[in-house]
Length: 190
Image 1 (tube, rainbow, N blue to C red):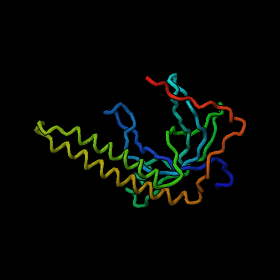
Image 2 (image 1 turned 90 degrees about the vertical axis):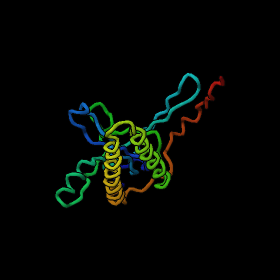
Image 3 (image 1 turned 135 degrees about the vertical axis):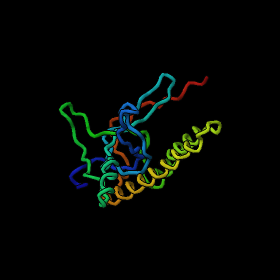
Image 4 (image 1 turned 180 degrees about the vertical axis):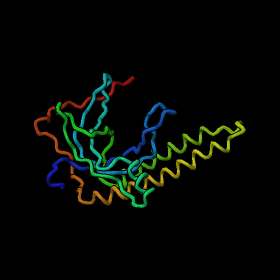
């Protein structure tokens, strides 16, 4: 399949989310962060007035639906669903797309970033604990629930990496040779 799809392939950090219910306004709820291979569809540099820039990448993750794994575990056969294939809509926009700020050449680099993001989520939950509240012990339940969600996320990561073994990491992103006259801007000193 990798010969049919000719997009660069890199590692990136995937935020696994599920759709929340009416209590949270049907917003997505983060379950955790994992490492996944992805197809790089587009890279964009946005320049700011002070000379800094921000690079973003539009990527397609082959597997990103953790709710499929949750349902399949209930039935006794863990599955992460069908592989997402990069496609384009009628207006030539790629889908299903996620926007990431960092791409990695190695699993280890991406894993460090994913672990840091998971640790930040855990830390934020810990900061919400108020010992002055008489029900402060119940607030620790949220941390235990987060740890259980992370276990499920790590299972998802393991299954996704097994199913994407055929996707070989690209050496480097190809850049058009005509774009060699870009001036590198330096931030303004304050």
